[in-house]
Structures are given as structure tokens and as C-alpha cells.
Amino acid sequence: MRGLRGVPSGDGDGWVRCALGHRHWGRHGAAGLLVRWTDEGGVRRILLAQRVAWSHEGGTWALPGGARDSHETAEQAALREATEEVGLDPTTLTLTHELVDDHGGWSYTTVVGDAAELPAVEPAAETDAIAWVPLPEVRSWPLHTGFATTWPQLAALD
Image (cartoon, rainbow, N blue to C red; front, side, top):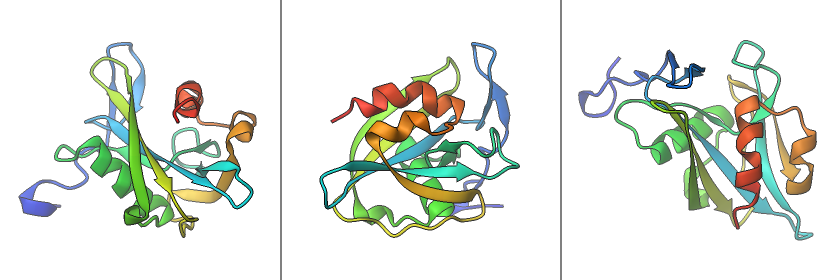
């Protein structure tokens, strides 16, 4: 299948091994979107998506995200994945940060976006449920291992 300008779309799907010997999804790396929103009571919340059972670490909670295609930047991949997985309109966000978790030959980039108003989202095919979780409660949720590892760095971003 060909996407924009004849570039293969979906060419990032597949498993790879990084220099550390870990197995990762995404032939060209992967990216996810951390959406932050502050509610009416002043509580900062993030959007978590529960991964479907058939996915890697299915049933855990993580950010919308997935494999990067060869022609995509991390930002493009993160926004595409969030649109596919939770129906997010990326124009509702102000992008503020990127955090790269580099494994040597493979990386996961988290793109951070702030929403001024509560964005409309709903679970799609790769997502069983979604939740707006207060920052202090995130660690108490059953998180995907990769997300749990980077969460302390992400939580510290202003």
C-alpha cells in the first residue's frame, strides 16, 4: 500500500532488536503522544489508553502511540497514532516537549501536547478504554513497562 507521494504507508510495522538486545515494535522506532489537560479544579491530568488484549502487554495502560513509518518524524507518528487510537484532533494541542528513550538503533519518542480545553476522544480498534488520570495517580495504574520506565521523566516536565 502506498501513502502520500508514493511512500509506503505502514512500512514501520514489525519487530526489531535494539543494541541492548530488547525486542521492540516499530522497524523505524516508535512514538507516542502525552496529552495533558488541566481540569476546572486545577488538577493536571493526562490521557491514558488501555491497550487491547492482542497487543504487546495488552491490558496495560499507556499513551496512544505506535510504530513510526520511514517517512515520518516522531511528531507526525505520535499525532497519527493518537488520531487512530483515540480519535484525537491534533489541532487542539500545543506541542511543548519531546523525550527520546534511546535503546541504540531503536528509540521511542514521547511528544507532549497541552490542551486548553478537554479534547474529544474515544477508544478505537487498538484501545479498550481511555481515562483522564491525575498526575499523582498515574504510577498506581497498571502501566505498560516502557511507559512506566519513562514516566518519572515525563511527569517532571513543566
